[in-house]
Length: 122
Length: 251
Ligand code: FES
Image (tube, rainbow over the protein chains, first blue to last red):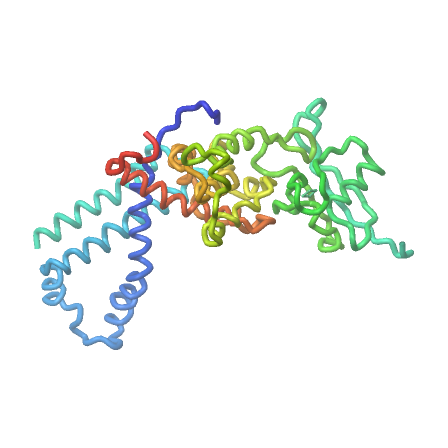
């Protein structure tokens, strides 16, 4: 590192922003979603048995706010995970190559597109 | 001295660039008293066993920041770390991690010095000020914004602690970023945009993966990790808002 060196601006804010957004969402909704979808519904606790019936879920996903919520949860969780995995790989000595980036952020990108296409088609 | 003299084994990582291919360990049996620091242990070795043992120190009171070393793998100031806390086990002292070793426990700090210089660790006035205008007035709350970050003694223990410094030696690193933050937060300073160029660069704050070990080892509770992470937010704002603001950070 030299003082005279011309430094490239990092484009990390984009990925860090998506990571941060996903992290915030995961902290706010993650445990609740795990509880509802993974424990409460399958075990018949607290919630009516048909809470997550196909008809109700479809209606939820057809509502514009429901769509938005599902999209945000899927896309931002994916970007959050991708960023975390990308950096963990770096920490384990698998260095930040383009391959790693493509694999991690690529999966998040594809998931985002797929989620958007499916949700818009409902 | 009591007749039951306690003796601690100190394993030292030795390296002499003139004769050694690579560093090697050497163990010394050092008689000690309860008030002896690890630094004094090293001094005992130098005075009694091997005068060529090389290490840095000055104040012996945790304020000059020159006596940092790895003590059982943890970056610490050796003058405020006591032998009694390790006895009866062996204690291992090594040069600080992530720095090139110059000799024995002395590391080459020139990389850190360059980084420190690059963040311009001094007040860059917003506009020229004449003597007649008198002193700057600062409120207690303006003072509170930066005072914590002025406590840095440049001991570089945080660099030895930071896994990202270990992976990318060009990363500006915790202490230099904490100092950049110290001046950025000062109401007298107007150098934020200049420093932002560095903080937002590929060598800047986003190298940090929020491990937080830097803040843990800091002997002055500067919390450099916090400075780094606050600046991720500043750099992100600068990134997205630079097109809106005519004075937006760097190119
Ligand atoms: S000798 Fe000055 S900090 Fe330890």
